Amino acid sequence: MDFFLSRYRNLTVLVIVIVAQLVLIAYQVKTNHDVPLIRVWAVTAVTPVEQVLEVVRRYTWGFVEDYFVLLNVKGQNDRLKRENGDLKLENHYLKSELSTADRARSLAVFQTHSQSKTVAARVIGNGTGANSKVVFVDRGSASGVESGMAVITPDGIVGKVVDAYPTASLVMLVADPTFAAGVISQKNHVHGTLKGQGHAECLVDYVQNEEPVDVGEWFYTSGDDRIFPRGFPVGQVRAVRNGKVFKEIYITPSGMQGGVDEVLVVLDGVHQEIPDGQAPSPDYKILALPSNPTAGAPAQPEPSTPPSFLATDADRLRQQYKQAGTEQNHVFGEGVPGSKPPDFTKIPGIRGSNTNGSPSASATAPNPGATAGTPPSQQVPPKPPVAKPADAATAPAKPKAAPPRVQPPPAPVESDDAGSEEPKPPAATNP
Amino acid sequence: MTEYSEQILTSPPTKEKAERIRLVWLILIPLLAVLSQVYVPRFVPFLSYLELPLLITLHFALSRRGPTAAVFYGMTIGLVQDSLSHQPIGMFGIVKTLVGYFAASVSLRFDVENPVVTFILAYFFYFFHQFFYWVLARALLGEAMLFDVQQTLIFGLLNAIVALALFRVLDKLKVA
Figure 1 (cartoon, one colour):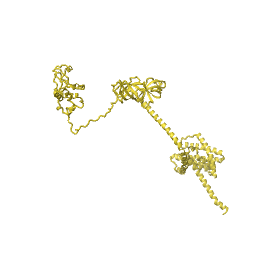
Figure 2 (cartoon, chains in turn orange, brown):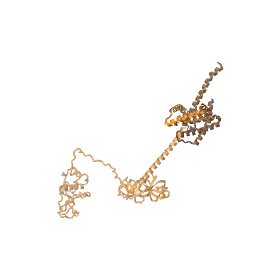
Figure 3 (cartoon, one colour):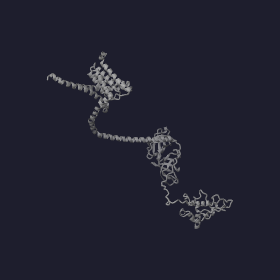
Figure 4 (tube, helix red, strand yellow):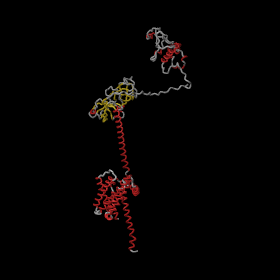
């Protein structure tokens, strides 16, 4: 053994050292424990020297480095300015790309939900005409695009295809002076023809002056032109004025807002319903009723006072006659000719008018101001007018029973508003 | 005071100074080598290919020509390297132990003062070091390390070139 160790001493040492380290590794791997002592020693021996080196480096090489850095500041400044400019351009480009992506997404959503069969296209160039508003899109006859097809966006119509080539198509925009399309207003369904003007606004022509069109009202495609399916938004009315025969209605095309980059070509259009418009809110402010100065006092009901919705004199007169008939158990319209009519002389307003002896006073008797100023019992009733022969012609047929003689109502009863719904007293009845 | 007595009085300090220098050399140089491997690549990343602890071990083994001393020397440097790494302690220790042993054994048979032999030995032992470490990592730790032969050969070439200059500097320091 001694011979072996002396003869192979180096090898023995090597084996012992290797085995010892293998055992050390095996212990660490097996127990997943470290040997912190050796690490602490090594780190403690190395890190102080490292700190010293770092301090030396900072105050020597760092100083020299700062010196050269200062020498290079101007160049670096120029470089940073250039980089800043490049970054601004890149930022602008990325924003543009993001906007394009948003538009493309909205286009895809619209394409999915639209009933019409469409194909998305991108505007790749403008036409060369001086006044013409035409663009090229990157979809042509190879994609199924044909001349005369409608071109839209989710916001509204854009134009129509005027030429279809295999790989591209020429689209006439709604702003083109030769463009025309049938449109219909949302609220009153007024038909017209949309015409391009060569600029941002379009004209809706052939709308009679009598047709009601409001500013802010939306126009939709009517489907009359057989190009645009019915129900696609066209634009909002910006200005309306009466012309010689037709209104001059200027609208801002909604499909052209913010430029046109991506569009949809309608391959197979499906008509849609015109969306129901909401009633426009009035431009004036509706104030609440003024408070009653005697609000503190208890309210006194006035049964003879006509309701507030009786705005005209005829309404008030009719109300008075109706009240008189109710008090005398008479139902208007049911009495046969010859039956006893109600005694209209008991109506205060009419009696007041009769006292005055002036037919015109009967119209002024139920004046709201007078009624409000004096109680109905104190007012002089007007005198009922005598039935005219002409009224007899319109009298009903002669009944079997004795025909009543009905006093004709005062003049205001003959107005258009009177007796439209409720039965009114007959103008004259022949016995 | 005779001449003999003067020699007795002056000799011991010289020997003590030489021992102190040797001790500092034995401790300081490996420490700087490990330190340089940790610190320098922070600022000069491309110098991370330098395996200075290996070159120091190699120089020690070739110059001392004692396998036992080279075994402990390599083991110590390797363990310090392991301590500053995430690996279990002993990986670099085993590899550098073997390098020290074999380098010292080779130095007993060849003229290692020849630059060509030094270059070849440095090149070979770098490749051996990297390859054996890869074997140990796969065998003992089960790590799926990649061994890029082409890159190792190129880095071995660069380390061998650096070893030629480094060994000359270290030899001059030792003589001084």
